[in-house]
Every structure is written in C-alpha cells, then in structure tokens.
Length: 256
Ligand SMILES: Nc1ncnc2c1ncn2[C@@H]1O[C@H](COP(=O)(O)OP(=O)(O)OP(=O)(O)O)[C@@H](O)[C@H]1O
Image (cartoon, rainbow, N blue to C red; front, side):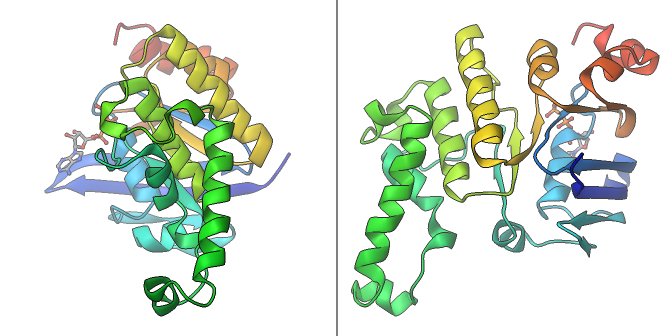
C-alpha cells in the first residue's frame, strides 16, 4: 500500500457562524481515486476548496506530500501540483480547445516574462514544447476533432472533457474534480469514467472527486468518504461504505 499524499486533520469550517464542515479527518493515498459523496449541502465542495486553499479552515490543518500546512494559497497549491475542475465549467468560452488546454501549461513555461513578451531566448522553443504537450493531452482525451473549435460552441459533455484536459495539462500530482459527470447522459458518464481511470493508470495521478451518481462512484473509486451535514459518516472501500448502516440510513437508502 502506498503512503498518504494528502491528510486532512480535524478540519472545521463555518460561514458567518453556520457550520459547513465539522471535524473532518481522512487520508488519501498516493495514486488512489477517492470519492466524496453526500447529499446536497453536505460540505463536499467546501472541503475541496479547503484542500486547494480557496478556504482557510477555522480549525485543523492539511498535510500534503509530507508538508503540514495550516493554509495553502490557491497559486501555491497549483505550484505544488494540485489542479482542479469546477462544478460549473470554468473555461474561456470564446477561446479554442487548444488555447484553453494551453492555459493549463502556464506554470510549466520556462523563460522570463521578457523572453515571453519579446518572443526571444527560450520563448520560441518553449512554445513548441508547450503546444506538443497540450496536443498529447488532447489526443489522450480524444478531443482532436474539436481542437480548433470554440469551447462555447461545444456540447456540455465535451466542455467537461476540455476542462479535464486543461487540468491534466498542468501535470498534477493531485487532481480535484468537482462533479465531473454532472449533467451528462449515460454514455457520456461512461466515457468520463474511463478517462478518469485512464488518467490514474497512465500518469499515476491521485484523484479526489465529488460525484452524485452512486453507481459511477462505486465502480470508479478505490476509496469513498461520505459526508452528511458537514460531518464524516463513512470512510472506506466502496464495499465497506455500501454496508455502513449510518451511510445507508443517511444517504444510500434515501432518494437524493
Ligand atoms: N461561500 C459560502 N457562503 C456561505 N455559506 C456557504 C458558502 N459555501 C457553502 N456554504 C454553505 O455550506 C454548506 C455546505 O455547502 P457545500 O457547497 O460545500 O456542500 P456540497 O456538499 O458541495 O453541496 P452540493 O452537492 O449541493 O454542491 C451549505 O449549507 C452551504 O449553504
């Protein structure tokens, strides 16, 4: 078994006195797919925002890649190899697929801003390398036919895939996916599940995802953490979680 890449230690978070997360601890092992599930308002997105530094917990800290942190700023999280996608797609809708994916390479560009601005020194060679990497990701996610299409004109399911492509372009060690299959039909969900599994296998990426479709979660995940009203009520393999009476009562046994 690999060691934890990410550990949440007694995280609590409130918004103007309203508790969103209460004393949550769990560990995510390097290379695993960990799903966060729970009813609406359970605190899943807030927790993702704590992990990548958008929110600072009131109490608790995070250990990431062996370093204990009270708070990581979002740009520092990106530098440390944490990438994420959003519940509502956050792409540049007026730009092409390729250009959107290239924005994911920003942190990988070598050379000074002056070299970049004047297109001198390392800049021209860098551009070729970055384009090559972006094209590799586009091939990997099978979006070549739309590489020059304007993102806003693409169907929703494809836009979700482009958002994944942009996140992967940053070569993350930890990938946070906020409802990567929301609004997708059955076939699109099957495709996205396969791409997420391929990402784990091909790049060894550790993935934490929020997903409402329990069937998808159970098939895809190595590890499931269940939240309810901001508290952790289940933590284990899909099988363990499926058999947990608290989870059955609070979530799996009720219609969502
Ligand atoms: N920025 C905010 N300001 C105030 N309250 C917030 C904020 N973000 C979340 N909350 C509250 O915190 C609680 C947890 O919300 P959160 O969005 O994390 O849940 P969730 O499990 O991701 O829900 P969903 O499945 O609907 O996305 C909710 O009561 C929500 O109203």
